[in-house]
Amino acid sequence: MHIPDGYLGPPTYLGAYAACAPLWTLAARRLRRSLSTRRVPLLAISAAFSFLVMMFNVPLPGATTGHAVGGVLIAIAVGPWGAMLAITIALIIQALLFGDGGITAIGANAFNIAFVMPFTGYGAYALLSRCFPSEKGRAIAAGIGGWVGLNSAAFTTALMFGIQPLLHTGADGRALYAPYPLSVALPAILLPHLTLFGTVEALVTGLVVRSLQRSHSAWILQPAIGEGTR
Amino acid sequence: MKEYRTFWIALIVMALLSPLGLVLPRIMKAGSAWGEWGVDEVKRMVGYAPAGMEKTAGLWNAPIRDYTLPGQAGASLSRVSLSYILSGLIGIALCAGGGYLFARRVTGRQRKGRT
Image 1 (spheres, each protein chain N blue to C red):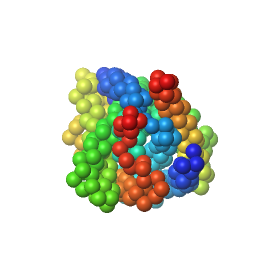
Image 2: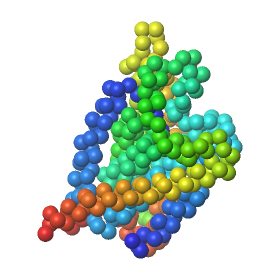
Image 3: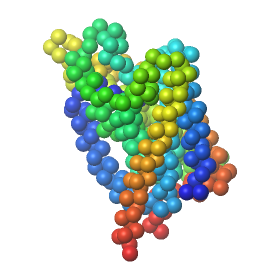
Image 4: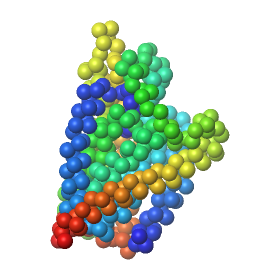
């Protein structure tokens, strides 16, 4: 899901940077107001955790690979704004040092993976865990949230790929950037995420939440937002 | 920090296990992730190298490209796996360092603002 350099035209990647800039500022402001000092190390752990989770490429045999992100789990631990910043840190290091995701595409990848995923997934989790407030219910809600978040990010990523031929096709009919239209990009990215990779994300999220519930660190699962203002 | 010891240990264990994410896709011939092909691969798939892509794809030369230490690109699977583990450990150090400094800066100001 990491868009490399050369796949997006300047309007898309500059637009994504422009969309992320106010979100990053807002995230820092929200964190300043509401992240308790006790959770500060959690932000560091979260950034490292998402970096590592993304190293576990999951094979769809004979076809393609994908990976989980841990974005919704992180959103539960440090709030969705904290997740945006933690995952952005991981994405920047992946791009600069490891060439995983392009440097022109850091804004685009952050928008999809660090913004869309934690917010949609955490929203689904918050909604579902209100309906099923038992511990087991909340762990399952977290798993479903992970699935929703990963697939939302896959969807916006596929949109970015798929609109490139519409925006940039030369007079000779050749694409200038990502060559596949929406009709190819959407199913190619979404189908494996809806099935295999989303399931992996859901399992990782749900199982970690379940084991946190039984550990001394269960307080982490209490809402992270607004804690510091009390 | 003591409160989080188990978490740090878990991260290091994850880094040690990370070669699974390298070896399993190879065994199952899973290929690369959709949309993360090199320009040559795109050329093979659609018959030409998109002009803009050709210009921007090589914009950045990452020092540890594909989580493989320099000079280890064609090495044996065990050495590439070692590279992968080291990349994971480097990633932990940098992400945690970056995340910690950032969070401290942000919440440090919060405390100053209150007194």
